[in-house]
Length: 134
Image (cartoon, rainbow, N blue to C red):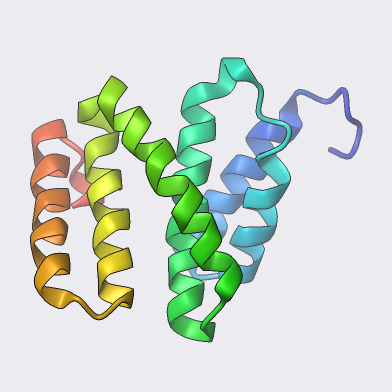
């Protein structure tokens, strides 16, 4: 995987980041997310957006657990990128955008703004048939 010409690196790093996110290994998720970001090319646009989403979601979790300032910057950059993706592919990215926005509002302790965003994320996931993201 360390060979720069290896095309499997992108996929391996991305999948390791997702795996680490779901099992709760937040530091490892950050590591793999940061490893796959620079090597994702223009042809891997979907993977780039998904990697930014998982990296931001993980970073928001780290902020909650450790008050990480680096995570705030990751989320600040990722949300506009996911917003652009949602503009191009509503069914695939709107629920993810609303989830990131809800998490951000929750961290700011503006729960009145967070709850409708969580509900919008769930509703969008339902409309798209993403049962696992509800």
